[in-house]
Amino acid sequence: MENMFNRDLSRCIDISCVKANHTLAEIDAMIESAIKYQFVCVFALPSFTKYIADKLKEETAVNIGGTVGFPTGADTTASKVFQAKELLSFGADELDMVINITQMKSHNFDVVYHDIKAVVDIAGGRPVKSIIETAYLTVDEIRKASEIAEKAGVSFIKTGTGWSGQPTTVEHIRTIKEVVQNRVKIKAAGGIRSLDTLVQMKNAGCDRFGIGVSSALKIMEEAGQK
Image (cartoon, rainbow, N blue to C red; front, side, top):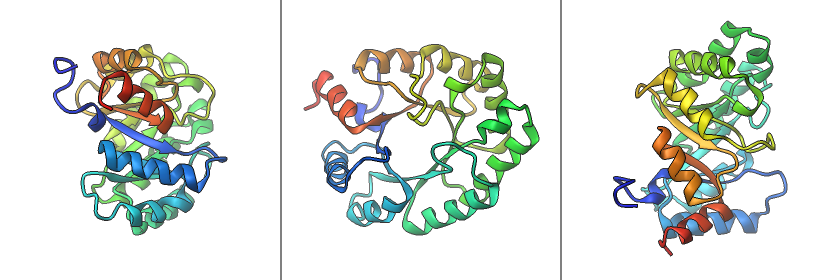
């Protein structure tokens, strides 16, 4: 692992509780895990962002994540901008926004671009990760979505929400990497449940991993970082 990563494994991982049926007890457990392992960022659904930020206000190494347009991306651009502003006011350090997938699939690329750009602009330099939901896109659409996201100024292209029911693959990472090279970072999310999968994606060019709490803890245990 020391040869594979030039930083601690936990500093490559964003942990999340973003399912509709997650409880406050599970969110509290996520917060405890973030403190224990110093995961780079923690995510919950918007109504819990301030709760998490308040709990982690003394943990300067752990960023607070905000979810914008989650999980469908079909919100209006104005509502995404409002949500981004609100999440930033709650203490979010990073924003993960879902692109307008319907418009992407319909090849209305200008609409997709301006939707992303509006959130990037309101973020004021804070990292924005555009979730392109690779499971729903063709290879050509993945490439085009990556081009659009880079043009809009995102910090990361993120593969999925974890809600599609289909896992991110190493090929998804390679396809995005071919387009953005090292100009934009890549975050993989959806179906990452083993250290082997994480390492394969890291080798393919992935920089960050969005993983549910239980899977993240299993991966840390697998890596021997108990």
